[in-house]
Image 1 (cartoon, rainbow, N blue to C red):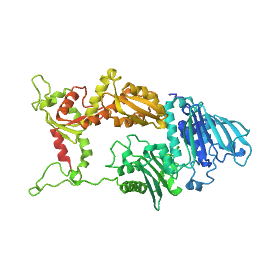
Image 2: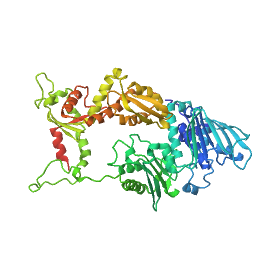
Image 3: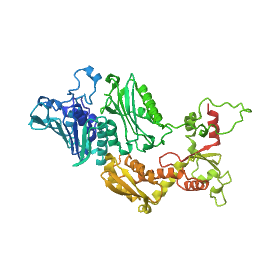
Image 4: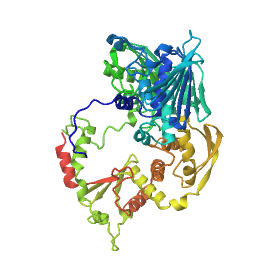
Length: 592
């Protein structure tokens, strides 16, 4: 660090612009978002997006909107220059996407920008060249009505920023996500996206449901439930998916406020609660919600990309979303009937005529936090030599090995294993234990397992979302080295004709598994083989969980305690905990 005393200075305009650009232009997808939203605000009916090298070389957005008058072209590249607001009151009555007047200025600060633009009532348009915030040329030019902007060499003037860009597959995936977010609510506009000179998608004007199906996939054609209700505080409409098409990936979930996409973990949680009991805990429904309300009741200016929004009536809207989703599922006959006979009401029998037992005032689940607090230090009681844990319950034979054949245990719901240990009990997560064992087997045999494949009886069709296509093609050879075999049907459609012979993946789970791999964080040109093994192990554990027998559990325990650090699960959590008698007594006596 330089300790030389330095005085306060006013930054140069170029540095100010590049700092400001960092808030708006974080990646190529940011440019696509800003330029496409500008085109929509200009009332375009057709918007064509052209991408080269995942936007690093070229991002081009062509629209047939209103265009810019020659006298306003230079102003368009100035910071805080906008046609959306004229006084402070306009901020609270906004229906446009943009309003701060920073997009073009921010983009021009970190790239080379070329623009052709012409209003409909002018015969001649304008041509502008801007580099590093400097306008190099503005001249008359013959061009079609609307605006054509080319953004070249993104971050060329800020090499450090360019070095932080992700792989082409990741950046292209981000561009696709922005494309979908914008295309869904603007179903009256024609959109196209061309990637490296190949037209990838063209969406023609259609109704909202059809636009969603075109993006989500044909499998949703008869699986979307419509919602629309008007309330004093807002109008809410949209679609939620039938539980039968719930996926293990988190895509296809969208919230919009006055047509603007936003993220809300809180609202998402309320939607997920409506599906409780209808879908597996590790799957996600598809949904698209449009919330329309007076602009003064929300603040979109809380995030540089405007993807986080503050609502005046946030809790009310959240509760309403939950209620509307439940209503739609109920009307469609998808809410389950309650089978009271199947609900366990006790864990041990009590003769009520002879007992004065007082049940706790709080539900048993309230002990979770207390339980966690009491066992945090339990690892200290686990001896490195795990067989010593059994030596007081007569399970050690003369050869000092554990006699698993005589080990007594209880299994609850095929998930929890409880067995007596030295001075206490072992409580294990069977699925986590299975996953660890499978992972160890895959890692140990990775040199022998690569070529083993089993042909499926009927080929399984897999539709690869365009935003994942590049990642899938890059990962295909790695997946096939594990035993998967794919054949291309069309640009975005493949069929799986082979699966790994080890049996850890069921045929019906192939598509979910592939998407799970494609959505691994920062998946790029190369996929970490250990992450593939972890995914295979998790799938295999779920499959084996349904076929457990007492003998197989004995074998599981034998294999587990033959591993180094058997308590450690593949996800970093525990496979089991050991509670001493003192731990148990403290837990019972401390419960209120």
